[in-house]
Amino acid sequence: MTSTLETPFATEAQVDAAIADLTRGAARWAVMGLRERITLLERTQRSVAGAAGAWVAAAIAAKGIPQGPLEGEEWMSGPYATLTGIGAVVDSLTKIANGKSPTAGLKVRRAPGNRAAFTMLPGSLLDSSVLNGFKGEVWLKPGVSADEARRKAGLGARRLGEDGGVGLVLGAGNVSAIGPLDVLYELIAYNRVSVLKLNPTFAGLAAAYQAAFAPLIDAGLLRIVNGAAEIGQYLTAHPGIGHVHITGSAVTHDMIVWGSHTEKTGEPRLDKPITSELGGVSPIIVVPGTWDDEDLRYQAEHVATQRFHNCGHNCIGGQALILSADWPQKEAFLAELRRVVQDLPERTSWYPGTEKKIAAADAAYPDAEHLNGRVLLKVNSSTSQDALTTEYFGPVLAHTELPGTGIDFLRAAVAFSNDRLDGSLGASMIVAPEDRKAMGAAFDEAVADLRYGTIGINVWSAIGFLVPGLSWGAYPGNTLSDVGSGIGIVHNSHLLQDVERSVVTGPFRPFPRSIAHGEASLFPKPAWFVTAKSAKSVAEHLTRFAAQPGWSKLPGIFNQAFRA
Image (cartoon, rainbow, N blue to C red; front, side):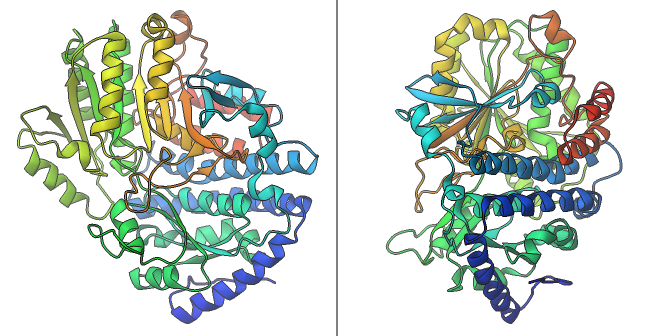
């Protein structure tokens, strides 16, 4: 059956019809063989590639992004992330269809705490070339063996014939690949088809999404809905919806589940399961070392990226910069950070409510610095602690200090991040290779003690979002009444069970300085840096590569990347 959606749904009657269509689509997906599923996903990948330009144009219009390098953000966090996600799922389904585990070919090692760690990046020679010097692992929960994980991997793709029903995906309003990738995971991991309810900020993307995902829509596996809060409420309560997944804030989650953000006892108002990704206050831990001027500059750009990418409207944006009070270069680093922030292009905050959050930060921190439309504030024992517990979701970066150096500082920073900051979605740390080596096994143990769903070492933890083999979600253990950064994971293209977290590692210095200092990296300044002048061109080339990977596309990528 073909469903043409010239306009998004806006009425309850249209929602009812959509759910009826999807109910029939779920039954068809249940009896669809793996080869047929692979063919459908490959068609979808081609349609996403064909609609990529319109998709990016709609996202740029939604955010009011000026022409130039910043447009690269929308290529990377929209079509590129989606194309790599679909391609990775196709690879896993192909392995299963050939009688293999979706983990076939993955290297595995033992991580601290009796954990199995599967290497997801690099996953191929092409990965090694495109992201040279980067590594990504999925860590399983303690005690789960690699052999057990390989046997159990597959999730819903192993359960052919299962009808997972119809779910509701409440899409994010800040990153355009989030909703589509959540829909993909629901379909593959749970055999669940979806209504994708767009956030109002992305209402203008409906037509581009419908073109991109036409094969899934035509197959009765997806419907895309625009509408006000009343439509969202109607959908969450609809008897035809069996599951809800939300990306947003804990307040929104609690209003859906409990009808209140403060009264969360008794029976939940929501009568169906819900999973979630809800953000928080992400730390950036800087391990003190002896850095030269170029290191200071590069890492200042790195920190600025983690906060001010996408205008600060990222659930994984680093908000709490943790420095050593005993680091002799602390003030030099902060001075370099100020220079970087001051020199960034002017940008208007586009996410609704940002002005109120900036005003709240200013009220709590009267001495906050304003640098070219961005806010830098200091937290200590005599100031407000709001920046540690309030996700500002905007261009606000807090810095604080802890005593110590080396492993003593790192352990203190890990404990501070675990105990004092709100949420557990992602954490990043910056450490020079020689300082990491000096800490030895104690460094790895400190990483294991850091209770976050994605950890970035010399790379922003958000890059885990772009690696489909990695998991994405809060550290496990949250509950409906204390939801933190959410419940459950997505992405996880190798379909592992018992996932605890993902760990991504990058080079401390870009090429060629990384090679000169003994690091194995040929990667220039990353395209996701807010200071990367060739970000748009690199991201467009990467998107074309993700649509159809091949060695012939690598020279174009590197040619642009080394202009950053």
